[in-house]
Length: 267
Image 1 (cartoon, rainbow, N blue to C red):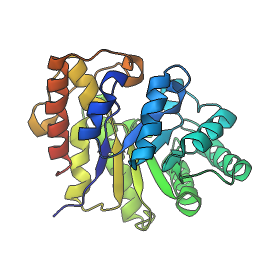
Image 2: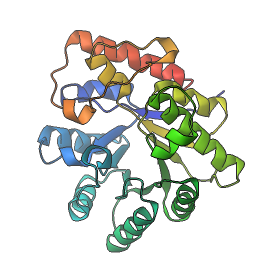
Image 3: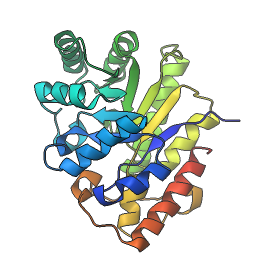
């Protein structure tokens, strides 16, 4: 039997309570806390209910990591189980510097430290991976490195992102660099079909995934093609739909897509 990958699909505030039924843990974007008190309150409640909460520094949404001091204050207040240490998009050496400085400055934060791998070349990504392998509690790998566009296969950018991450992880394993003793998190997705690769190839320490893909698709009336998912990807980010009032029809579409996503990851 394949190992069980935990999954969280970021969802609008109006269905956060419903999302508890389809999410294995709750994934929070810190930049939304200030603007949407109801959003923050949901995650505070999740912690008190004993659900796992992973806090993201919102780099994908903001283009740069959320302010370090404010982020640390929210970590102390929320007490998430895991938090992604501030990183720098596609800049490995500044990501290492950011990780070292943040963890040295805030030594008493609750939760496990997730180190995000960043870089533009295989060598740079490997150097950062090795650093995070040593100093982080948990290693995160993003879905959209420009590196994947060179190494991935497929006619579209989305296909190259999907196969590019598969190839990168496979290369780390083949080169003896992959740390089998640390949990790994896959940040986001281009095409959902990517994820069947990991359980099928027994990459057993990919512990978790976050992707709003099935939710955003459902909000836009797009239905997964069975376990194949979508060929395309909605261009809008879930964070921009956070205050959407979800209709019953949309909720049914989301539920269908989420069930197909679970099949993709052999659930």
